[in-house]
Image (tube, rainbow, N blue to C red; front, side, top):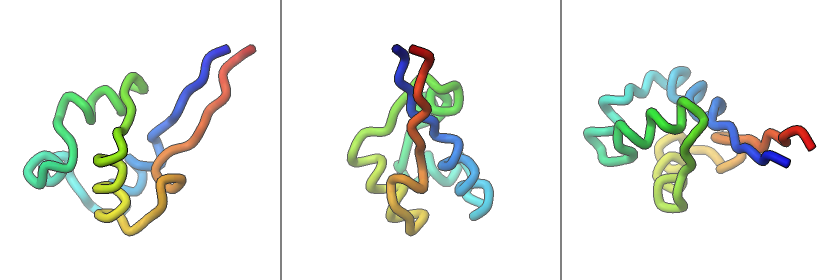
Amino acid sequence: MTLSISYNKLFELLKDKGISTYYLRQNKIIGQSSLYRLKKGEGSLGKETLEKFCELLDCQPGDLMEYIPGDE
């Protein structure tokens, strides 16, 4: 069974609010390589980074990610 967390909601919120990857890097919210891994579906957010995104976007963790069940 494969478990997966999708961060598509995070990228949609960033786009909707006009927040660039440059802004995220300059404000030390997340590094470029971590962001790239998230986009590819290979990375995850640590608690500290998740808190930074929630504060920046004024949202809850569930607004940034969703659980996608894998095939059993």
